[in-house]
Length: 490
Image (cartoon, rainbow, N blue to C red; front, top):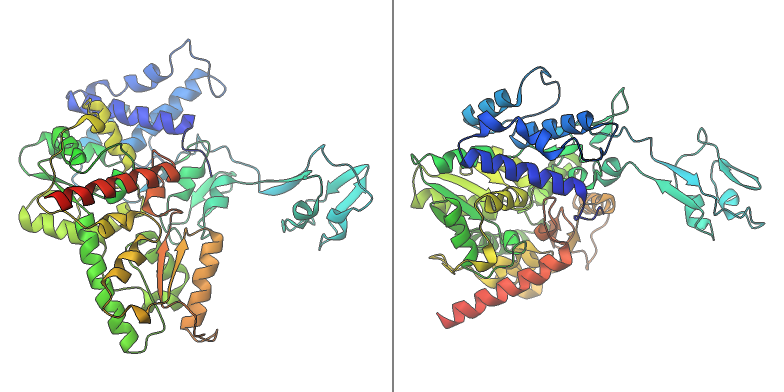
């Protein structure tokens, strides 16, 4: 997994901050064209062939960060015209991802390569175990690319670790084969297959896969006093900032939101409903039920494992339930979900209760632009305090624990979890689908309640996190503990 501390992430963040600052000053359309030249001055060593190529990449990234797809755009248009388009649109545009052709490195096809660490040993386990006889030895091993099927047996058997795999990071990260090369060798996304897990966006070291931000849209509503703008923040956001309950609420209010709702409130509703639904399903003889709060997982099943579709809980997501509460409390308000998840942005397109979805990177940029330090904010707790189990939805195993806690008969529970929809995670899903369809026999120990999170570690491991999963889990634990103590003292 690509370290979240990298230059591409820093560049994306800086562009978002600059856009937010200009928009808040009322100068986005007027001064957006300065961003490429300011970020790539003449005295800065170029990353690519020249500063002009670097500036063009920044220009394209700026367009994407304003929420506009960059495929097949008119290259003669100015950044100011794109800013005007972003400021005038009424709703976000499909799809949520865009591929920067100029940034894509057109990586060579994934393959195995023999390094100079090869000793040409007598044992020759690479050659002996190759199923296609693609390896010959002449002082050291050579792989015939025409015969190789990329099975990896040579890598597994080399005692010197002299054979390495050269991957295509975005293709390697995609669990459903939605990314492939076009006729020019650059990557493209098949949106009929894509589950919007965001793995490609996170893993591409050239930053060619980009999400189209909705930050411009949200700031526009914040600056327009016509409607209340309400922040719905996921528990996973609490894991990304050094804060205790109440500080995030203060930060959102200072950033310009009129009201805040913690989505852990919706998680409590979700857990209540799923516990009841699970007991009803088991009473009627269903083989299993899976959780439903992860939209990337739900899409993965519907697109790729239809045999498991009937097992998905009919309970709506915490985001939906919280948005319902917000719309009821403030009819006509603009609801903005905030979390580290790309798939939630896809879910938001289909949910009339959710108007916009911001990522961790988006809200961090707004905080920086507004000079807000979350850790120094005063505590302003919400009117409804969620449970610890609701806040723990954000990490792997948290949904299972919350549902189990609410069961009237815990003896019926046989829990299991899939922590990350990697390619191996998809194989597990397919196995459960075969069990449900009767193609694999049901055993007494077969799990009957399965939590599935597309991101390893849960939502705290989402594609737009600013802390690694271990740090995020530690911070979430502190946040949950502080919240429980506050509730006990109130």
